[in-house]
Image (tube, rainbow, N blue to C red; front, side):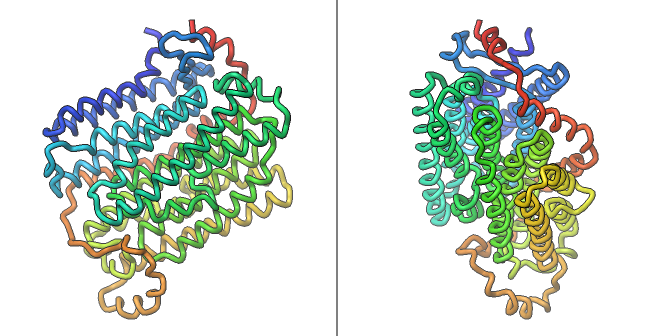
Length: 520
């Protein structure tokens, strides 16, 4: 069997698993088994593909159904797509185990048909499909699959706050999808294809003004999905209200799909249409505004949501530098952020169960009561803050070094802004850790009087009962913390792969013949 036969399994396995899980809706253990096995198989397949494309140095293109290019759906796996599918599989599997523990403790079989597992696997299929899409329309389909599933997941429980924020999320996502679809229609009308390889060769046939319009439309659509400032207003209110596992996977993966789409289109389709100055300005604004928003919060989920926005700015920064070293650093930082941000949200989920709240005005004394949770929060927090020698520091240093090689005044401003943002991120996360874990009961009144002006969570930190923490939830979070440490321990090999990705994206070989062979 050819290695290319494994590529469609990245999407078909989750879809088949979702169908089986839906049929087994009355049997929670069966659903858990199916979901776990499905994501484990995807992880194995993606790992094999990553090894194959990295060792061989040649991407794999598969034309689904044997239709000739450009009529067929092309699934395209290179180092970037394979790496992101591997990382996403690890994150999805860990969050799934976390949710299994939470569901078992809280009782998730109150309804005759459970929709979490089918929706979760459909979300996974959409993410994987977006990463391996070889044309813009299939990328759009991937977005829509994951968004439809996310609509269900973000409103689980049907509370007033979840329905309200879910409506905002849906409206914003639909606006982004309409922009994306309109851009696809215009590109197809102008060039007669939406295949990315063919677009990279034909885009120069269009006038510069037309290219710029198409370019900005796609950037606008992807920026909404990636929560790039000023289009990030929806995220801090949407994510914190969802259940802890849903928030974790949304924060870790959904915005990165938007960043991935920006990387693909910027490096492959619009290589000769320069909007890097605009991207640099937007990156700086995203970093600064996001971290200032985090400093103004008193609720842990909202703090993390604003830091999520802020650190999207680093990825846009690396993309705008547009050198092979910068793109490689961006890929490494994206992998780091997917893992670390997910881990932090899982740790906050444990805090919420142990303390009954995620407000730093209410949570106190957890160092003595829950020292394990203290460690599980502390390690990814200092990692996200960029403290040496962790992966956050490695990724940021690589970005700053790539920008310094370019050396323009705007690059220097971005480097300074990135350093300040990193320090403020560390301050915001450590302030939350200090108040939640080190503050004693008798310190609460004075502390609350000093920081009560921060309490603008709008119901996101409603006090709930303290609940038992199943071991599997702690184990899943601990496993993710180990993965964050592994990003540092194995930073050399991983960064080498990312460097090869950066070099191949900005100096691509012609893949038309490869795709023709795939379509035979």
